[in-house]
Length: 74
Image 1: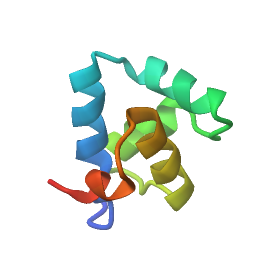
Image 2: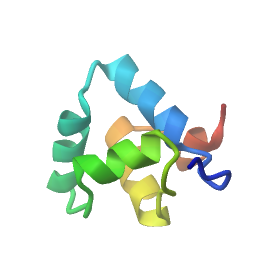
Image 3: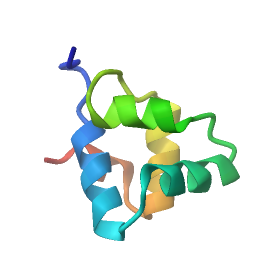
Image 4: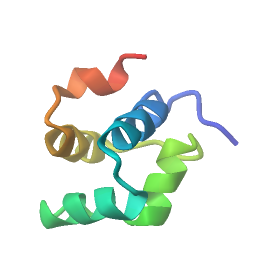
């Protein structure tokens, strides 16, 4: 089931692909920053099965070195 409230999932996947990172690599980078996320959680966010929390969005923006609003742009 896709959540209409998940606006960032596809963008996160796109940014990750652009960097050439696997989901495991992104999760490792997030966990270094003390982000409480697993590969399963990330996969569900990217597939729009679950919604990213505000904290996840902040950490993800930091790892990708983008403004958080960039995650919400198509």
